[in-house]
Image (cartoon, rainbow over all chains, first blue to last red; front, side, top):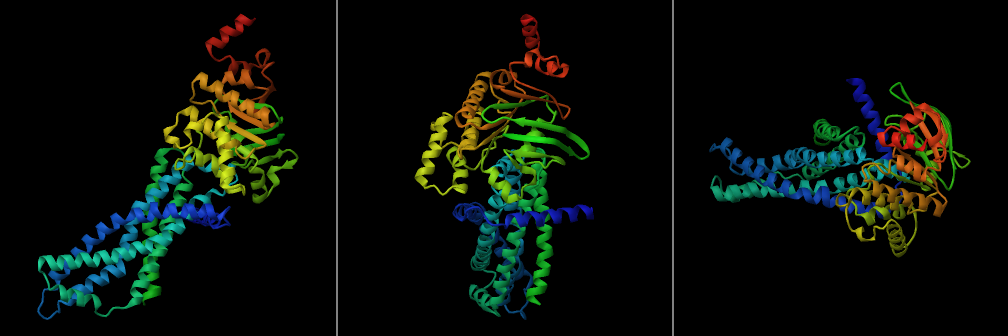
Length: 248
Length: 251
């Protein structure tokens, strides 16, 4: 088991060296990066938005129930919603969701290319297949996922406001006051940095799993599952490390 | 000319290629034949560098391919065209984009020049009407023809074909064979075809290598293959009842 993990880690770093070697022609990569931003980033907006609005609303509801005490000011509900959304949900939880959506997509796409010899065809043509296929995806996700994170924060907080305004569980102005209470800009920066790191983890690990897929469609399915599991675990480990390094 | 000397390749301790030494001539269609699992594809993949042989040397003209660095190999690979068994066209690109890819990456031609070159190659394989189609919208024969167009777009000196007729009907197989043969003559390419299609052997097999149990068992041409007294080769060539009847009629 340990030997397998060490071998896979070694292969991962060798692949990353290939990925970050000098590209054949930059203009081709530009086109591919824009296409990947649309495919992996912009196409993930609906899922991120839907989940964020509901989670924002649910957090506000749960907080209002938990903090029903005349000694606790109501604005703390808005404050708690903001903190939950910015510190953890919009980066870590959204990253886990994207690991499922984008990670499995990348692993199955590259895995299928491997078993149908498309990667071999690129290699025979003299193209650095790892760089050509993986680098645009990494650049696209590292650039676009922090925007998804930002979007998730805004939509989640709006979801909380909507539930506060329409159910009458609290005064909306209190909610808005809570959003401004003890606001620290660094928390947003911390969240966006985390998301950029998670984007790299999701894309590189998923691409690695797909790139070394062997055999048939069954193996592509397995590599896709492995990609999601490995990315999720790595995200959790790095979440802990980055929080320790950046927030304490 | 492509040649290999004393080539060995094994996977997980199982020897697939055993001391293969062979020379493939320029300007003629060289065929590697043999039963499924005999090591034909492994030999082809060793020749193009997709598999590293354990022992032995591969030469492209006078250059020892096995001793070249990654970047030096890359230069040789720009002169290689390869047609894979399943075509291996990029699913996310149209036929036009697939054929244009090597030009985008390795030439400094203008968009107009690239378009003209791609259109010429697609015309050559009679696929001009399918430029905007994706691989999933093509038939088996069209995929092979698109793969041929991509393989020849950079005017390669060496062309490798891994079972170009697999999964095709006899008539389409003949068209593909003729196309590869004509391109080989027209551009004086060293073509190596991996096949077990007997029609290809008889029609375009100017030089034939028979691989059996990972070893070079027989070497010759389509003129002499029918009269060979090599038992394993005869078992392979005259495997079908029709071929056996034809042989007895010839006798």
